Length: 96
Image (cartoon, rainbow, N blue to C red):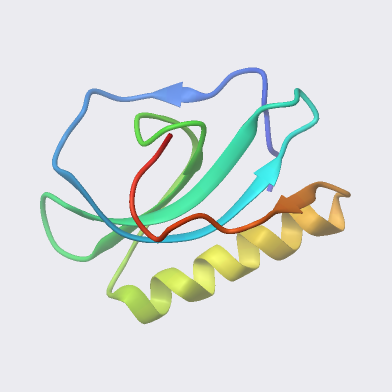
């Protein structure tokens, strides 16, 4: 999956209830990217990677929290393989 750090996507804010923050990495642009799972409108759970819940690079809707963790781990492994540095975990709630 190509990660375009210079051009994140933006969507209007919908229902986004943070369920779990999976990981954080430092991008080549020097910004911190967070991967988290959210309860959203409609069925399932949405996993997002981005600078904030509404400024993101990748998103995927999955059936439940177990599948969200699998997607988050695959994305994390991809970024670490590209040489990005993982940052220490924060508390399980909220964005900066």
